[in-house]
Length: 344
Image (cartoon, rainbow, N blue to C red; front, side, top):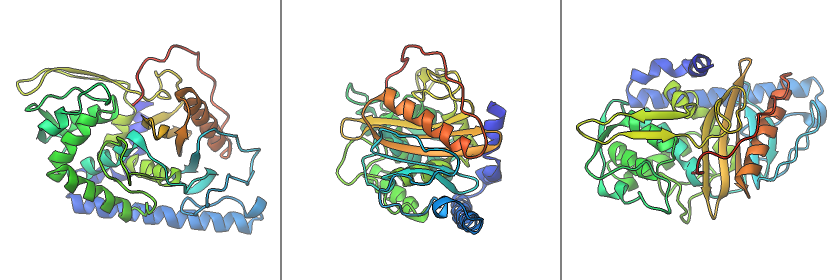
C-alpha cells in the first residue's frame, strides 16, 4: 500500500529536482487541467441526462447549499459546519455543505506550509531553529519540541510539522524558507491566489487562532489535493511514526501522527494517505483527508466539527459516499480502541 501511495503522486515526481519556479508553474498547470477536466466531465454527465443537472465541478461556488444531488443513493448527513468531497483525478464533486463558508482552519493551515516547503526548499537543507520557533513549545500549543539553536533538515522538520502538528516546526520552516514569518505568510497568500483559493487567507504558518485567518471546505480540499501530487508529502502524511536520531546539531525525536484514519491508526480507512487534522477552540475540529482505493483518489475537507469522534465518523461516511459513486463498496468498520494521541 505504501508503494501505491507514493506512486499516486508520480506525475510530479520529476519536478522534485527542478527549480522552484518550474515546480510552481507545473503545479499551476495541474490546477488548470483539473478545472478543465471538471468542466468537461460535468458537461458530459449533463448531456447524458443525469439527475438534477448532476454533479457540480470542484470550482463551482455552492453558496453554502448542502448537496441535493443523488446520483447513486442518498448523501450522508454530517455534523460539520462545512464539508466538501471530490474525486481529485476526475474533478467530480460528490458532496458539498456550506462549502464556501469562511471558517477558521486551525492546523490544516500546515498543508500550505508543507506545500511551500517542498516547492521552494530542498528536503536535505539544514535549517537553524530560532527563538521564535522554540517559544511555541508550551502547554497551549502542539509542538515537536524544538530548541533554539538546533539545526535539522527540512525533511525532519516536515515530519515534525505534520505528525505531531508542531507549531514550532511551522515557524522554523517559515523562517528557513521565507527568511521570516511575515515574508513566508506573504508567500502562502500568493500561492493560494495562484491555486484559485480565493476564499482563503493566511495570517500565520501554523493555524493558531488569529483574525483574518480562514478558509473554506472547498478551498481546503483543493489545497490538499494539490499537496498530494507531491510524493514526498504523500510519504510524510501517510506515516504513523517517525524517529529522528540524535546528531551533533540536535537531540533525538520520536514523532507520532494524529491522523486516525491511516492504516495502523485508531480508526484505519483502507487506502488513507492523510492529510492533516486541526483543532482550536474557535475552529473546532477540522481535517483535510484523502484516500486511494482501486486507483481512485477521493479528497475532502471538514470544518467546525464539535468533537474529534464526530469528525472521524463524518470523514468515514464521506469517504464511503465518495467511493460509492465510483462503484467501490464501503470500507469495513475497524475494531474500536482507545484514542492514542492528542489532537493538533
